[in-house]
Image (cartoon, rainbow, N blue to C red):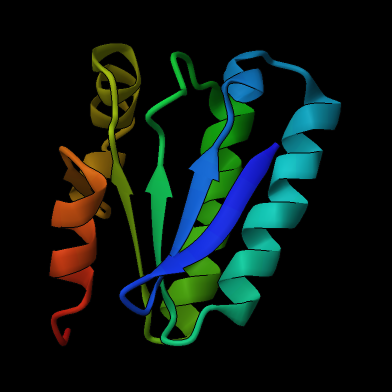
Length: 117
């Protein structure tokens, strides 16, 4: 599944490799975890660790957009890290790299999200 924890006050959602599939049931499960983490994030800053993710599709992107909008409504931020080349290409093609910061690793993302907006 996905693992949720805090690092230096920032909520981290680490996605497991099983979300590489296009299985809607698994993506719905991920959605519950991610949106739950977004709702409880205090401060409302979430870093999505995609280090085990090798493929993302439109349903996955839709889920991330819902999470981002909920954080934005709370004056928060969503960022991603450990994005491989294939997933990065999808984020760039969909222009989502323009609204979410993409970091090479978790520590860099946490350090940036700890800074005031």
